[in-house]
Amino acid sequence: MQAPLYEQIYEYIFKQITTGELKAGERVSSEKELAIQFNVSRITTKKALESLAQAGLITRMRGRGSFVSEIDHSLKNSTESMEKKIMIETARHTRIIGLLLPDISETYGFRLFRSIEEKTSALGYHIIVKFTNDKQEEEEKVIQSLIRSGVDGLIVFPVHGKHYSTELLRLVIDGFPLVLVDRYMRGIPACSVHTNNEKACEELTDYLLDKGHREIALLSTPTENTTTLEDRLNGFSNAFIKRGLGLNPYHFVTNLFSTLPKSFESHNIKVDQKLLRSYIHSHPTTTAFVACEYNIARVLKREIELMGKRVPEDYEIVCFDFLNDNFDSPHFVHVRQNEEDMGSRAVELLNVLWKGETPPLQNIIDYDLMI
Image (cartoon, rainbow, N blue to C red; front, side):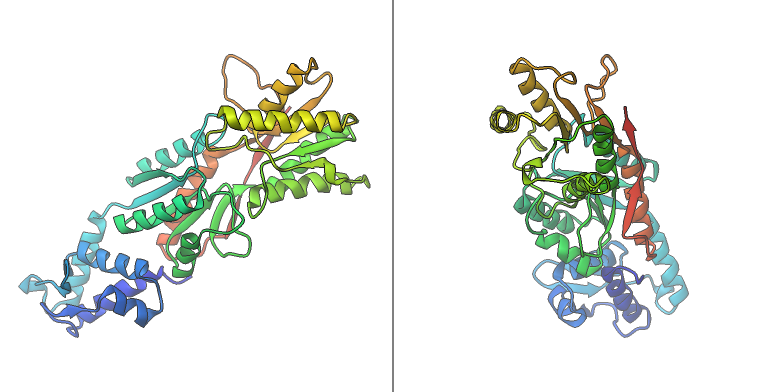
C-alpha cells in the first residue's frame, strides 16, 4: 500500500524544496492547483500543506498563499541535514486522532470509547471526540471540521442509513487514514474492526432452537445499509436454514426505534411498546425473540410484564450486549462484544496506515455468548 495521498503530495513539495527547484520566498502551488494536479480533493491538499507548515518548510499567509520558508543557512545546501530537520520536526508533532461516535451508553459504546482513549494516551497521541447523534448530515459536518482542524487520522462509528456518507467515501478515495469501528462499508475498501455479527446472531438463534422454540422473531431497528444489522439478520436466517426450518416474513420485525442515540427517550419507548404489543397479539404462537440490541430487549421485557406474562417462563429473550451491573446478573442470554479489543485494535490499525502498510480491510474481534 502506498503512503496516504496527502503524504505523497508532502513528499513531492519536500523534494522540490530540498533540490532547490523551489527557493526561499517562492510561492508553492495552492490547495486548488494541487488538487487538480493530483486529482484529489482539497481536503487532501490542505492536509499536505498544513503538514509542510508544521515542519517549518513553508509559511502560509491568509489570502496570499503558501511560500517556501527561509531555511537556516547551514541547511540550505544539505539535503541530508534538511531531512534530519524534518525528522525532528515530525517527531515533535503529536498525532491527533478524530473519534466520531453516534452516542455512548453503558450497554454499548462506553467501553469502546474508554479503550480508544486509553490506547491513544498510552501511545502519547491526542484525541478529539465528536458525537454525530446518528445523523448523516452531522457526520459529514464533523468530518469536515476535524479535517480542517488538522487531525492525522479518523476512527469512525458510522451512522445508520440507506446511503453511505459522502465525506466518508471521499476519505477512502483520498487514502486518508481511516478506521471504521462496529461495522464496515460493503463494497468500499475502508479498514474496519468489528464483531462477526452473522456468526454471533446465528449462535443466539441456535440457543433458542436447541431449547425447542420454533416461532422466533428477530427484533431490530431498520437494517438498510447497516452491515452490523444486515449480518445479524443473515445469521438469524442461517440458523433456520441449516436445520431445514421455514422462515416467514413475520419473523422479522425491523421497524423499531430504541437505539443509540437517546435510546430511552419516552417517545421512542412508547412507539416500540405499541409495535411489540401489536406483534405479540397478532402472532400468539411466537415464544421467543432475538433482539439485535439490549435496549430493545429491555423494552420488550417491560411490555411482556405489563401484559401479565413472565420472562423467560412465558417468553424467552436473547440479545446483543448488556448492562454491566455489579449488583445484578444480566437479564438475558446475550452476546458480549469485546469493545475493549475493538477500540485498542482500531488505534493499532491507524498506526499501520500511518506507516504506509496494508492492514486487512476487515478485522474481526472475538465475542462471548453469555448463558
